[in-house]
Image 1 (cartoon, rainbow, N blue to C red):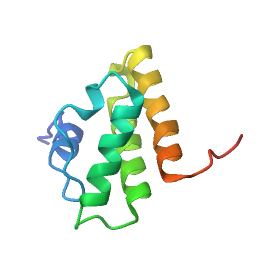
Image 2 (cartoon, rainbow, N blue to C red; image 1 turned 120 degrees about the vertical axis):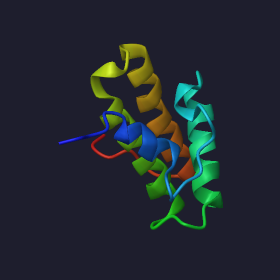
Image 3 (cartoon, rainbow, N blue to C red; image 1 turned 90 degrees about the vertical axis):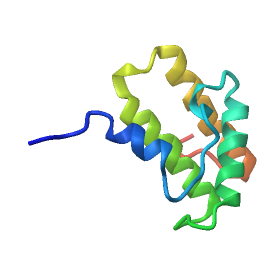
Image 4 (cartoon, one colour; image 1 turned 90 degrees about the horizontal axis):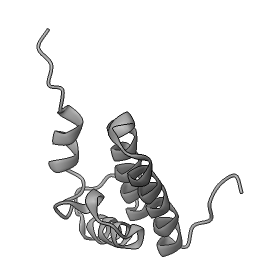
Length: 96
C-alpha cells in the first residue's frame, strides 16, 4: 500500500480552512504564532467553525502530528502559543 509519510505536512500547508503564514509554527515568539493563527482564522471564509476553534485545531493538529520530531523547546513554545491564543480570544484554560 503506497502511503505518503508527509501527509500531515501537506494538510498543514494546504489546509482548505485556513491560509497559514509560511513558517508560522517556526516562529520564536508564542504570541506571534497565536497572532498569526488568529489572523488566518478570522480572515478565512472556508472554515467550518468559529475562528478560535479553527486556530486552536490547526495548532493542536500540528503539535500532534509533529509528535516526537518536536524538540522539547519547540513543543513548549507551541504549548505556550495555545495559552496566548486562549488569551487573544478571551477563553479560559480548561482544568486549571
